[in-house]
Length: 430
Image 1 (tube, rainbow, N blue to C red):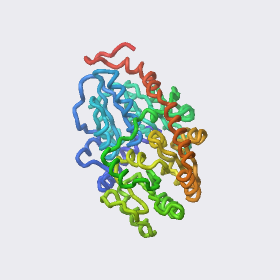
Image 2: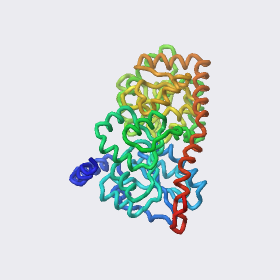
Image 3: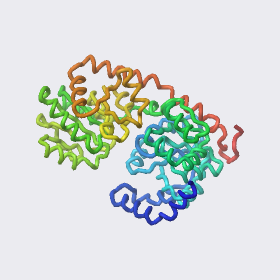
Image 4: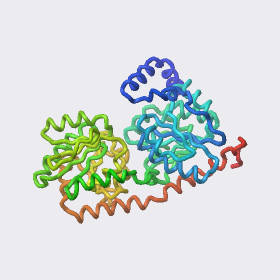
């Protein structure tokens, strides 16, 4: 199966180039640094031992930053190459990565690109985040006698079913991992069933992610503008959800005529189109990307900007997490939980199934099935201050209970870090 996959990546080169060109045209690829996607380095390799950490996009990247900070703090002389595949994640990593770590785009999983990348960077240890199993990148790294470790591995029910239809390929890929650390025991179990030889769970690294940052001036300005006005937030929404959220607003403003609904779409570039649709539905919409003012007549504030969720989690403590009323797997509930929010999500939380189930069990989150359910849940939290406080307190307790996960992950990594080469190139004794 791996040979067939590799042959397909070679024979499909014209299609790969067309795909990348289409992404470039849509602004999904970095024109200046595009060579990195072909395995061409954008920087020289630093001297000394080098850890390569890879995360697919923003969410996975943020959960790895705390680990990278800890590695650099505890292992002087270590360098960290951090790769992602998206322009937005590259922008965020430029702001978040600590000194000693640097960003490159991950190469497309074509054998010649992968080998070019590995020949230049020569990583001494590979840390692979969550669930993006690129066969050539993983197996070629392992073939060079480099330990490859899966960090915070996640296997959703959909992914599990899909990979079971290709047991030869996923088995070969997972055989390239020296150690697989699953987000939860259910993930570790699925990894073992798919062929991982050493899979366990020591906790979810997302609990170690620091609170989302906020611009203090922006927070003060927005807080002063809104005053005591009731509001709720629909965060990281996906196509189809904004219409449902607007329907909820229509229901709730009967009893709350001054209600403000805040929508933060997962992809900000959709903002103008969403605003047009909502306005056609009779809503007064203010668009943040064009600095439109929130007035007393504004129904919906559409925050179509990047990197401001930390602001809106702090400004609205009743939050619906998007990507969950559509069958796409949900968004990370830890981020709002850490910032004092009462949480609501839809039925589609496969990407966070263990976490969501545990939060519901202790009253830290409420699951809704549709627009009507969502309206009931939001109204209940807006109207009942005690219920809202109980939900927020439960969410805080849930997050605090997992605070030691980074220590547990570092303990698992210790033998591999101890075996890294010294600054002169000689490997330490394990």
